[in-house]
Length: 569
Image 1 (spheres, rainbow, N blue to C red):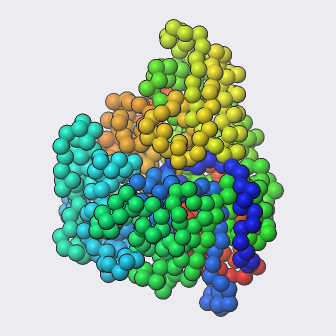
Image 2: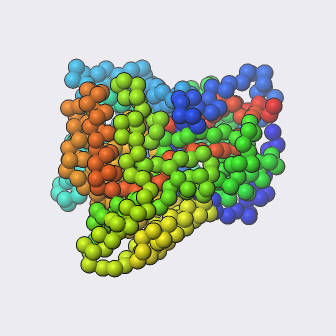
Image 3: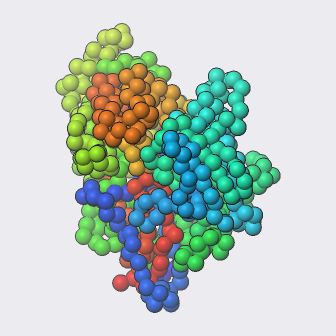
């Protein structure tokens, strides 16, 4: 494959929107098969080929601090240069990584004792149990303001919720109350709040990666600001990354990785290209081996082309409605908005890339219940487009508010595809809801994350991909004051059902399933707490000579650990 410099990168423009979390793959037909997985290559096929991958991404990296990361771009690269107790393998199953085999588990399934394998940081220091304790405490410390620490640990790791609540109430808290302890350098004890059936997925997630306390402390505010201010313990390390504004970064094989012998790829060069046309031009010119997600106008041109990989992701996009806004605190106004745009037309005519209209927030073909049924089978569509009903709710809501018109801010992305989607929704809402003015605010992804955290929006186009293989990765988003709620939604019955699913029903699969399904019905059908838009189909171009790329359902997008480069067929 041609390995030339990216001459077209100076003509970059903007492309598709990103979602607010790690989100990844499925299959276009909804099965478990993932594109490009286990597509291995022989030693002879790679012997005379430079093991270098050139690829494009659509976004700069918002952060490389595993404690502060909250987006799929960050999680992908943190996963490739770092490692925790577990990691996802080529078959998308969590397997021991820094953990030396399976842990010792107490009879009540709450206390886990992990023995750590020999491994070291890129500065030569050993990775120890103390590194896990430091990182986890830093992630839950309210002073750190980690967006994912409280979400991933609260209600799961003992003491996490209490620390978060104390911080929010400006009361004293003790980080030593968190259920993580270093028995010695090689022994880590983790105490859970309750049994967690997806604990392996949990401990494979980047938020639970270790950090070297001495290094982080010495670097201070400079920690994770660029490649030189990071340590690595994963398959790769960053040779070049100048920080969050960088549009190019380079990963190289980490010779000190404990399984370095199993890593064939020597170098990964990533360039940010936000315009799909530019990305396709680079791919066709042999200047890149892999594009980011293709915009919908390009997808039809590659139908049937073996170089395009297509799969249905367990990723749902939606419009968040901030109930700090008096108008959006009105259920009729929310129902009007949720029913007031034609999402079928959006998916087919605007997106036109295999994505489907979403009348739900737990995606299709993501998880199956105790009897093998898909989560969607019981309730199916919960909130559908209906212009007539939307108008009725709108008029009722305006009357209840004592007004005859409303202006609402709409926070969207700054890419071309995002702007196209947002403009369509604006037009639909203003057409179907007389008296509504939608004021579009198009901002970069990193800014949208900041404003989401600050709840500085009225409506916000956003989305979610699962962090672990359980419906709770979606249903627990909307509990009152939840770490990822950030839109003021609250329903005591919803909270009760999700709390039950997380606790007493955790080991009763059928009742757990029913509780989560009913919670989703309440949130959408009764409260219209959210306006689902579509479930995303992903499409990328990949050089056929790239073998062994792992594309995940949850957590990081991609893992390059098993990639081998061969001559393109």
